[in-house]
Image (cartoon, rainbow, N blue to C red; front, top):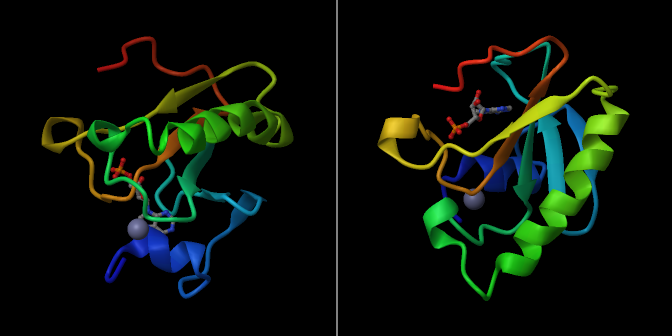
Length: 114
Ligand code: AMP
Ligand code: ZN
């Protein structure tokens, strides 16, 4: 999709610090990390703007992302645990409208989630 920063990252038009890649998804280190380890996981295709666009037609991709997340976390040495976050809409502070999941870890995370 035109002017979508994550599509540009997926296409290699904007460089990223890759943590994992396969034919369907890409994981890269967030440019503005909120934790010692902060990885963003995206489908390479612009299949959904966010959580509200998940449906029967794209749920397999979401399942694939969630199957890969434990491997990405293990690779990032998050054996003590991690948090997965998906910001959805204005109140959650979503800024990029290409569905993505944040993996946060590398320290004892704040117990308050919001
Ligand atoms: P969200 O606020 O959930 O939409 O998350 C978007 C995330 O993308 C933010 O944490 C940004 O720091 C991150 N981000 C934006 N541009 C880049 C980039 N070029 N490389 C890596 N992460 C980025
Ligand atoms: Zn996109």
